[in-house]
Image (tube, rainbow, N blue to C red; front, side, top):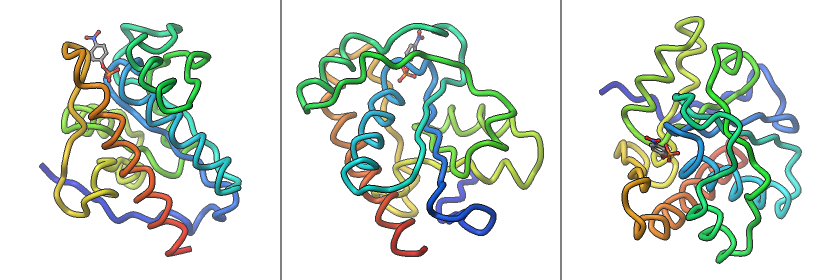
Length: 170
Ligand code: 4NP
């Protein structure tokens, strides 16, 4: 699998208006947690960034996050209950600077939707910001009630790594 992980797309958009999209399959388990963690960190670090999330699939469009993700977020002081699932679109590649995905399937499906080769390179595996170059994947917890706490921990590291990498290189 081909993965680009160090893409600091700041050239066409100043840091102050960085837009990030986190993507999983259903947009109800993993990416809503990443969305909530980013949202919290952006506010805590007073960054003028925007965060959104989407799924490569449309199975859950309009639905709030999975109750197990809402509960895991709540356990960690975050309220993600107002989020609504939506599907990734080709337009997202123009709107967002970084499209951060959870696993290899999200990576392939997202890249396939890109309107051009240049925009395709906005897709990056989120775990490469926690463990550079390893192409790690955030496991899908949909069929694993016990998987949500681990997913949350992985995403905290990835979000922290992403923000540190981008702000240090700005
Ligand atoms: P997510 O998890 O991609 O982390 O939101 C899933 C949610 C729903 C399904 C699969 C994965 N599903 O098959 O409905």
